[in-house]
Image (cartoon, rainbow, N blue to C red; front, side, top):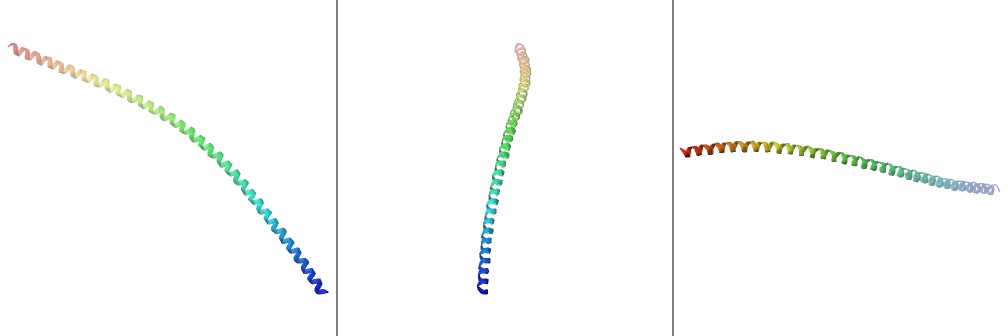
Length: 122
């Protein structure tokens, strides 16, 4: 009878350990699911935050590009104005130089013509 009692006790302990093991595995499964859910939530939050930061950066880049474009346009306009002024001044100077040269050549030609005329009269 003692052998029978030991067998029953062994079977009872084995069944209890088996039940405890099953419960432990179930708990591990629940813990892993919870961890996976937490990771998924954290990933989703991080993705949203990254999206917001990317959007802000894109807006700031757009604003900076717009400002740079305006500044470049203003600088180009100023440079064009200065170039036009320089060209106008150079044209005036060239015109004055041509006028003086033409006068000098005309005077020289006139004097030469008068000398030729005088020589011809002699």
